Length: 198
Image (cartoon, rainbow, N blue to C red; front, top):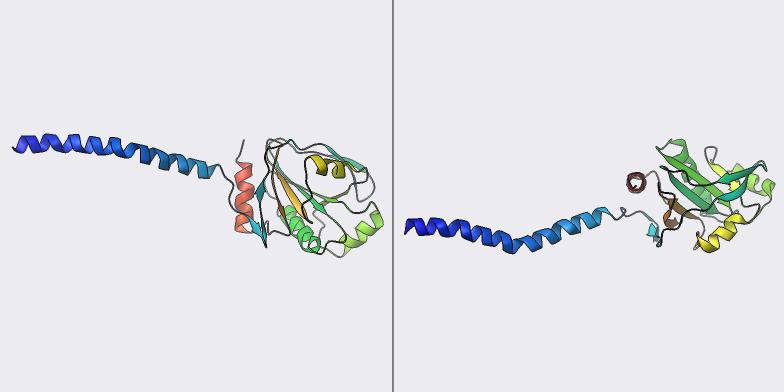
């Protein structure tokens, strides 16, 4: 009798494992699926929103604040934040210094580009920026309308300011409107998530 009980024990546990296997597999797959999604990053009433399909970032022919031509594009292996702002935008007065602070913190493998969209008047732009702490920020002017053209195809301007995140593969991953705190733990997690993506 005792032998029969011992033999039934292992058979029963094998059967339990086989019955539990599909649930265990589903649980593991769900865990891996969650890892493929970026962490939540919010700013006021908006949050980082994925863009699909992931289009490559176009080259942007812009001017710097001294009127010199510049071609801006994503660099392989680096995350790029492309920020669109305007001189009439109150939230931009909070957002641009935050991006400048992020740039000044010398983050690993990160480029930041801030593009003025509402005027080509360099004096007006410099006056607007003069009252803000943005010394570390690469600011540009859409002097040739290239960013405006790209916004129709790649960068939809859904609000002002708006920042697009370009991943290490040079593709647009998502955007966030408003003035998010990129130096917060949630901001750091989002940037690190995209640094680690191939």
